[in-house]
Length: 229
Image (cartoon, rainbow, N blue to C red; front, side, top):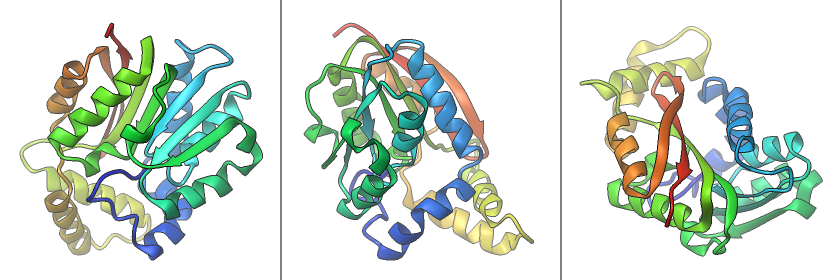
């Protein structure tokens, strides 16, 4: 789930705590994985080959592999440490999972029967994000489905929603001053886009039938189909 030069996943502490921290920080993460699997299944066969962009950590690949025993997966991620975590997470399914270090540019040509890019695109600026979506589209068979989800810039003050996401992760007595400071820092660091911009980029990359399916505090998720090349 890491991608791009602004990723924090070179930090050993972040990597070590990723599997424990991420479900706490992302509302309904398990349900997000289940919904992603469901949406892919509408277009993908029981023997589908799925591309996972930002596969580090392995949480979504593990969830999909458990739910769909006939699916195969190819995942890419630039962080070697996060890929090590992913290999541990998917160890029971290792015969169906191929993990490669690199960005989407290092992914095989496919064609793949579906793709995910979860908790990744908020690390990429607009041009990098568009390139990633275009390269995913190029590797999908026509009509195959893509599922994405990440932080978005919401409303006139995105840092307020980011602060709420930070506070959600605390779960206990919330230190609002600290949450607001962290939300401000994250909003300044991440190249967030408004939801309308994300939807426009999906269309620009060649995807059709773009629809919002996930909304949780500062997170948004979309499903879209690959149009003709």
